[in-house]
Length: 123
Image (cartoon, rainbow, N blue to C red; front, side):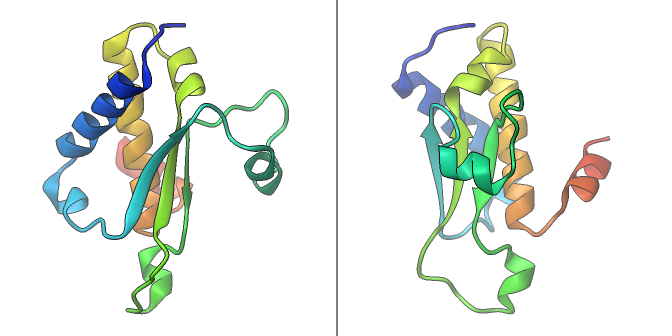
């Protein structure tokens, strides 16, 4: 596993977000992008993750299509899990790509896409 300090990890996240197509990036509103080393026990339980399953990122909030035009005051949250992302990466370039892919995936959930549609778009 490669090692990386939190400051540099956040710089890669910022760079990955800025690299996303502006049509997707510019419409993201009131979403906090945070990091954690691993999913919390509550998140693991909520998602029914088994002990051998890992999670690279998680979107928590109300997807745009379900809001029916209403604004939310509490931000949605996208969490990127640092240690699983580092564990999936062989070097900084692959880490950046894993961060970018995970960030896109979680933003797609913000837009209301399910896993089937996300995977279809990724082909």
